Image (cartoon, rainbow, N blue to C red):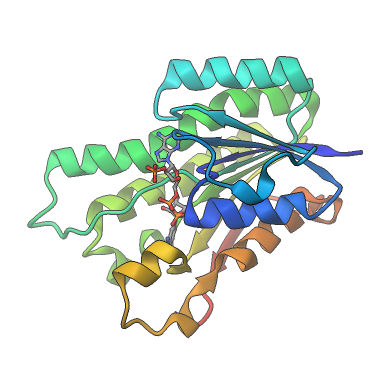
Length: 231
Ligand SMILES: NC(=O)c1ccc[n+]([C@@H]2O[C@H](COP(=O)([O-])OP(=O)(O)OC[C@H]3O[C@@H](n4cnc5c(N)ncnc54)[C@H](OP(=O)(O)O)[C@@H]3O)[C@@H](O)[C@H]2O)c1
């Protein structure tokens, strides 16, 4: 039976690779979400694809949207919460506003989507929520110069632990994927001299997400995936 998957940040560098991956399999119906209009022209007209403009940084707007999707589809099986942002800055240059901004874009956007979906999945006894952490959230040497970003992303690991504790005994699992630098058009533009062979490809992360959401991923619990390639 086909699974219904919500993908936020669907227009992004990673988001478009993930949308593409899930549409290659007959097993999924994709609900793509971003805060500007659909930029995934490859998906236009696809029978198992729908796109919605939602600001997932707004709690009310997000929960209204999730309720509408639950009414429409009856069951949401997976949520790939890809919205996030990045900022440089060490302890000298990171003020309170910078902390709040990174908390908003990386944590609140995930929380506002995960919360109503977790409750829905818990009622059904099945669901996969995938959050995107990052290497600097796990490695202080990588995080000290991206302080606000590393702190905000690190909270997603704690959220996953707490959701998994709340879901014990069901087949609802929250996973965190922690990538190093992803090979996206934006990163190639911003770091023209970097050794891109060390980066992780969006397609590789998308394959991992598909495995998590597939029946093959059924026995996985409390999972953190470090996907660093050679970084
Ligand atoms: N790129 C990397 O090297 C890297 C490494 C480790 C982890 N990550 C994480 O991986 C995830 C995806 O990264 P990415 O490079 O694909 O980022 P991206 O290209 O910036 O994609 C994020 C998408 O989310 C959208 N968005 C932002 N705020 C939103 C909101 N409030 N509501 C709805 N949509 C919103 C963005 O739209 P706009 O662009 O129009 O704002 C964009 O389309 C992020 O969580 C990021 O932190 C990335």
